[in-house]
Image 1 (cartoon, rainbow, N blue to C red):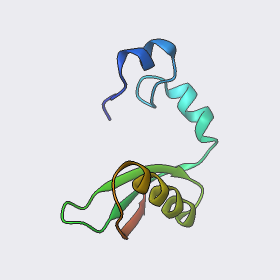
Image 2: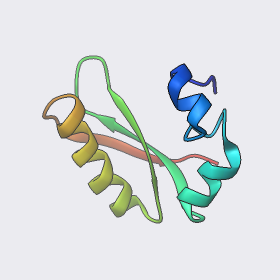
Image 3: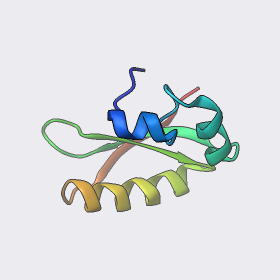
Image 4: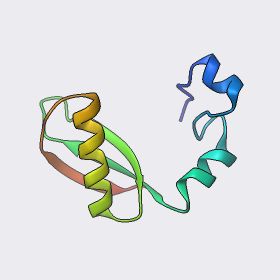
Length: 80
């Protein structure tokens, strides 16, 4: 996974799991990463950290509606 953080975020130290894995693990609190697919022509994917599939669906829906658009979830899969 390539880092997509901007330079300001990297310098402050609040980066993603690629550029600041220790902080990412601490913030995750032992939760697993889920990829949630939304029903659309391009099958949009939202990644979230959650402790269950239900929590992943809820978090992904909120994130999707906030950032993208309205759609229905088509698939949830736990990533190792």
